[in-house]
Image (cartoon, rainbow, N blue to C red; front, side, top):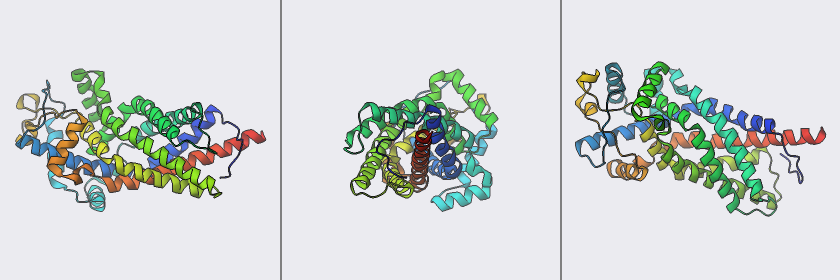
Length: 346
């Protein structure tokens, strides 16, 4: 990817293609790692809830009715008891044996619904914010990408948060679309439209620092290559994206655990014989809805599971995020350069 001292701006539809193509590739190749990560984090989340029932330490709130049928409850308890995951490879093999290979792409449709608009909004707003802030690659100010990354991420994440909720719920357990729609419909009637943004705060806790750390490292690495007269080609861009993404993913994993904890709560209320869950175990039947405060959740996970609980799913998260960031930025930069040259020659 050759450096161009005065590149032509790309058109809006070209920016959508450049950013959207990377989102599609990432969703297709990285969804299995996301499924594994969510399962490991769900396991940690359930262990914390079991501890909360035995020794309540978080404030609770009541709800009016059940959202899941008795069959779903029985399936959930059987699934959790039969499959204890000890690591990435163990989780992969158990999921494939018990549920089939296709389950690794659970939530692919909402993942595409999340990733494509998120990336398009995110990259477009980031590049625009960086331009408005006056960022100059020849004399870079490392703080400007941090500000641009934070602002663009807030806008993008808030916009697509409902789709992220559906994707996480589908990946945490085997939920068919019909059951998911039933859960969402009942949750909407009980809690109103705000339920669609469940987990938004911990998502922002994860994504804003992630974006700030990622763009700071990526732009710093890129600027170092430029100062060192090293060609910033596709290979260099891929390496910078992977390294920056890996660092950001590691530092923000605790917030990702809290996000998963909140979002898999969708449809889990208190159960009783009156609402059709006669055969549920007493543990699940008495399970309270936990505090929605991210910091409280993180502190409780730390008390129950220790530091390893805060980094549940780190390995599959790194296996997904680092190459995903590399694919995304390489695809975007390559297509952006292609369109710049096309516009110049045209």
